[in-house]
Length: 434
Image 1 (spheres, rainbow, N blue to C red):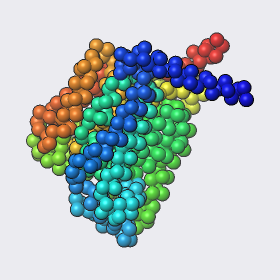
Image 2: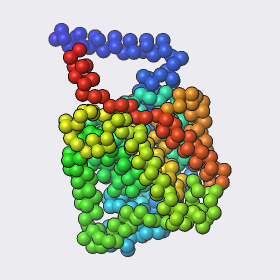
Image 3: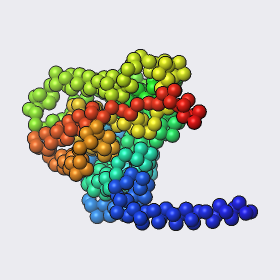
Image 4: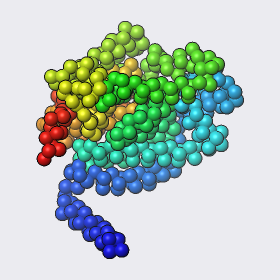
């Protein structure tokens, strides 16, 4: 009983102490990463009101929602041949997870007719995504809290993608950020399962795959990584089984079409090129080569510990001479976000809804750069220029060029910032003895 009273009496005192600390540091609350939780909590509740206001006051724009509903309606009516499934904007080109999730939305929104309800569902997706993203930033404590205003309240394009367009991209990214949170908690198997579900909604999540594979090998070695990769593959197989049984080639070629051709009129990043160059297979191959080369350079020169063989990560962690052990939150997030960002830099085309693929990762990448003299104002300016590039419709030569310049600056800053070294067994043992 006395213990209970003591416990209850210490809670108010702890709250009072916290409030006192906040008041003393009131001028630094927006600049100290230790106040991330406080600032993000306030912004998250503000976002509830902002989303309601946007839904009620800004006109919904039909782009893909009706096509999504037509595609899943075909499945509901008994068509399991992927080559026969299509909507107003073309054939179904997303994996099976998309079909199941949007089938649920189909029934929830009265066969896709109750768009206002769909908007509120996507507002919930948005708020869940923000919670997951804010938790990642809280775990890493790298970005000053004032920056979070720019990644939620200030972005017109992101609100539009979620609640005014109802694209499938936000659903995939919500699942992806959920998987990253599980990785940060050390729940790698469950995280891999959720990651595979994200891939089953939209294939862009595969841009995180090189970084994830590297982290799995670092954490578990080759043999213990294989079951997790198998789990990812089995989930894809089970989800796609109804379609694979009818037309396996049709399903794989449509759901995982890596050679899909994009229309020049929608490109955000390559507007300054002639259309024939944009459509050229040689240009696509050059981008793929640049993508793979940049990834390899980061793996060999930045992600891997200097002085160690790349082959060492294939062995079991307990058998390694350098005895690299647990990854910390900063290492995990930096590798995953960088892997995705490199893919965005060398993408064959970026459409407006693709902004959500990396939007929430940009502040972390900018504040992870190795250029210490890159002032806060310059970082915010880069975020603003990227936002402006994505909000310029139709895209122009200048908006596309400015986007590439910003990408190049971020990529160079990341290159100048090697991933923090992993702890060695000797240092761990020494710490334990003390």
